[in-house]
Length: 358
Image 1 (cartoon, rainbow, N blue to C red):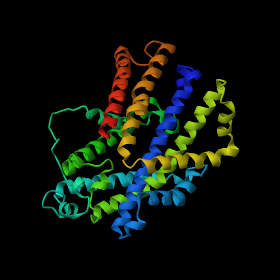
Image 2: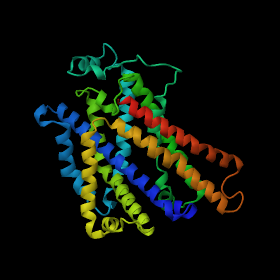
Image 3: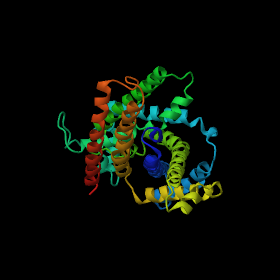
Image 4: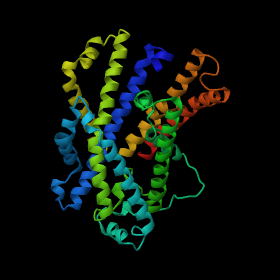
């Protein structure tokens, strides 16, 4: 779409944004895998000496992720979409249950467990910064995270092409239903998670729950399975993004032609896949809190792909087709407003994310 409306010379920027976003998704997934398996092994009674986040992540990467990421076709993993949805629904439901049953409130069963656990104080409910109507600059961090949470724009053409009985109206209905379900899940989990732990909500909310909580153990198992089998889907986007960036730059006659051509050579694909998996794993090992990756990715890349690029594409397409073919005056005004909005949300979100980790 960018090539057709803006031109091929700058298409590499969009491909690079997609590659960076998918790389960030892989880093986030790796971080969740390390955190989740460590919690599960702790609950299973594995000694701390044999239960480190780094070794757990390296083990799962070598045993499960590497073979899955070397697959050229992901057709066999089609069931993982259903598995992932089931895991998300279960996790959302158990968070709601725990927010309502009072077991993590002062005097509750699992509040006492966290209180007694070594290092558990930072997981206990705390509401010093809670306010009903107050808004702080940290709200831009949330806005940045939402930019990543709702991102699916780069796959829109593929989704439309694969939609059975496709038409613009049907696609609009599917998108509205999908984003409506997502919005409901996100709002529910955010509200219930905050009601449970307040200021002490962790970037990975599952880390807040006691290792002895059976519902949380189920949530960690479900999440671990869905992340492991969903990882290759994000990794496939990374591979496509890297190859797309290389091909776009090659078509413009870059001086790096030899190196870029080698990266797109099928004979080197295994090495490329192993290298990119190693890169994502190394960054996940270096960054213990996935919130930093989520915040920066959502603010910088998310804003570009959610607010800015689609607006530019649509506005340029409106000039290339007949009047009234692509929205009216109000639609175009909204699109023009989204560009500076995206720049503002991205910039402030990135700054606030960095400040929150300093």
